[in-house]
Length: 597
Image (cartoon, rainbow, N blue to C red; front, top):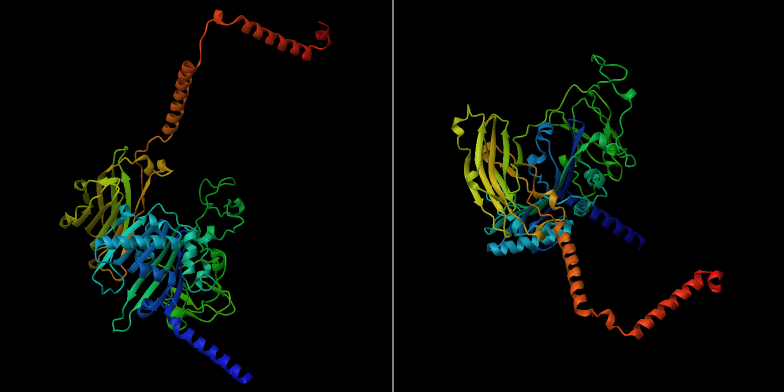
């Protein structure tokens, strides 16, 4: 009997292990570490899992989180894209954006989705259901994306999945004022199979993530159908990209304040004529700084996630983008393999199971530098003008390539920011070699705002000639709000969502996810009343009411009589009472002398 039990247990263990290995290809994760100029480090986390469409429709969730799947089914959402971002990507110093900007969002929270509905009203109702459900799931203020913050883009977004439904409505909303914090990271980690306990997700710590110079978290859910006619799947992809300062991240938590370096530890440039004992001109660092995964993230990797794929290139979980002569030390006992790809600049490692994994890069002088990919566009946007009544917006888009670029430009403005479309101007500089591009605006889609009902939707199709700069500008009016519509920090201003730029396929776009560039958000000052005036009015009104009421009450109630009309008995009685009180006072405080008197 005991042998049968042991055989059954061994069979069950073998069966479940084979099931896990067979289904491990449905979940993949990868971490890319790429040093950037100015002692910066790009850490890109990617998590991807699949679920068959039949299992999804039957609510048989295995790798797709049940919380997300039920929300999508209840709101009839076929494709979802959610972004949590803060900071600014320095394209001039760091090069092109990760994932070509396809996994990047504007400052704050950005959401767009394809919802299945028969009419626009039904689509708006399901969009409201989706935003409220996601607000509770991710502890964010997505429920504030109402009709005034919702638009229907035309050309800027294209579906990444394979859709066969004809009644799909694209809706987009943004909250540029939303503050991204640990409350959003915790639900993000709970959607992962290992939930931050193992794998590369064990490095995601709120203290490090939200101390980064630039950070974005993205969640993308889309249907994918193979070209060979196989079964369609529902794919969820979670991405975390951040740029960390190496010197700042290496400081311990108990000593977070940077302190100046001692003078004897600074290497001075003695070739300067003003160099002396009391003056020093520091030399630039010619050595690559030393760092390790444990120093940057505060902890090593807690082994591999058991559900991660274990075959082919998918087993390469951690990758370093460094020159070939860069010395890398692997600090783990369970080190398996190392692979060199992409001309020797990429080193990938397979994580051990159940053991800590750490990479250490010592301080070293390098002769080879990895060329940074050039950004396809540089874009900035700012508010111009002065005064509390009118203003203007100016967007500067630069094309550094040698070929013309076709792009779609989207702006979603609040209803209290009312632009004048006839003031829209597009100027190209330099103009000497761009005579054939006199009209850079090819198409315009404009939907004006309605007070307190919807915002302004402006979408343009533009063409920028090679090595040129396009300047867009327009004027707008500032509306006066009701005093109940101002936030507590009204004098700070109102946040305006960033502009979204997408390179069109005619520009040589290679990624099916698209190439996107987002500008920074704007801070719009509005005419703000003096909120201390209600307090002053209340105090002044109360004082006037007290004086007026008191005077009228005295006139109506108080009785005035002459002194000769008062009875003598009353005067005598009053005089006796006063004399009695004076006598008792003298007896108490006068002492013996008063008694003898």
